[in-house]
Length: 197
Ligand SMILES: [Fe+2]
Image: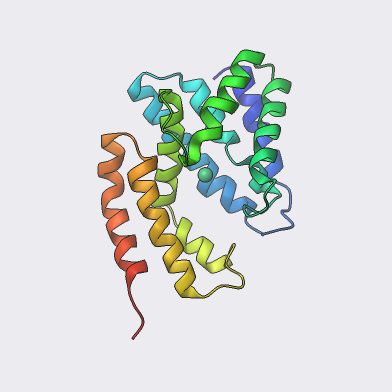
């Protein structure tokens, strides 16, 4: 791994090492989300013959503002992109590559718009969705009532049900991962689809 990648990882770890005033989950985010996304990103990008370094950098920096901001803050996405740009630049990544990683790989990873053609963007999106399926992501969010402090369990179940569909059908772009996620997807669909009494 080159120096820039190591510098970026250290910087991101430092940010998640701080106390998050909006939700006390930075240690979980770092260990059980960010690092899991990075592992999937490395594995998939290697197998698919993509630029592995760009995928790893994007994985560590995706949604970096979650380390200190809530997801429902309208400034959160822009703050993540701005911080990613700053950290990459400070780590010595060339301006053209910074723009590619931030604007073409990180920015579309939610897959809410058109599906990007750049394969590295598909890798990050897949890795992110896999981290949701293959960890206790949905249980952790439920336990913390993150974004659902004033909502009912039924609201949370409806949100999860929609999110697992989006993750499975819009964010995962490779067959091996689709196969791996399938049992988790089916289990979550049953669990969160269960009605009361
Ligand atoms: Fe993520």
